[in-house]
Image (cartoon, rainbow, N blue to C red):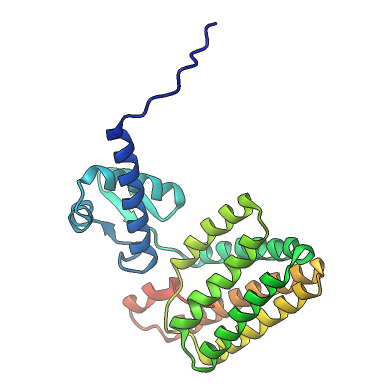
Length: 246
């Protein structure tokens, strides 16, 4: 059998189309994770295309990719819908995140450097300021960066990819501005325990403290949903049950 040694040729038009689809996908993803596109609602392809000043082709391609990531789902003859995360979905994502977070900490503990330590301490200090002020809008991105930095610092590319995919779903049921100051302070104290275990280069303790932190976050989330359910008196309130927490 003769082997073709000529490299595959990609036309400029194909390259531009591929690049454009990636840009559109990134922007739609941002709109979903920020809440600009509402969970459970149909994605208006024309409106999105007009907003991004592109044709509907790249939007359709981007939606197919986002469906594979679990951020949207396709309904034949009806269109594309933004995924609405249920209570059971939230529990599954928390459980996965607990495992990924704990594994990352256990891998990082033996190789922790002074540079990584200094950055983790800085994150914790910044989160402490935000927690004391009850500023969730400031605390939340720092919290996500803190955990992502631990995962990133392991250098395990597959773990990083899996974790970040999980966190994208995690965004879908987080509500900004509904978390009490006490919960933020408690969460950050758990961050300090994680960093202390890492500084001790204790892989087992790092795993345990990290897993415990995310598990406690799940408990706080479930308690918040239960409280919301008890206080709900209308269908519109019940639709909010896929929200909250740290």
